[in-house]
Length: 109
Image: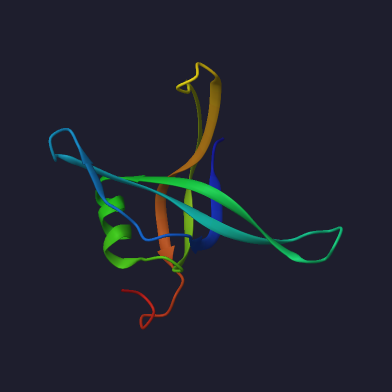
């Protein structure tokens, strides 16, 4: 089973991008998830890459902005590619399947 549920805040303003001659849409963004370091008992953050497609991407871009808090459910996706120097690089991201607004209505654009 490949299911991920996370809560965090968007780290930068969102950009809706199109593909397939404007017939499809997607957005890629990062959310910061707070956690407590067990060594220092200090708050730290993990930064998780997210991709959303089609109508979900449009809705997220329309209603959220940098700093907005949301809950995302989706699946993990891993891939690899060669960078410009020919080195193999790996990428892991959450492919969003659903989300919930967690900010109150006054904070959501």
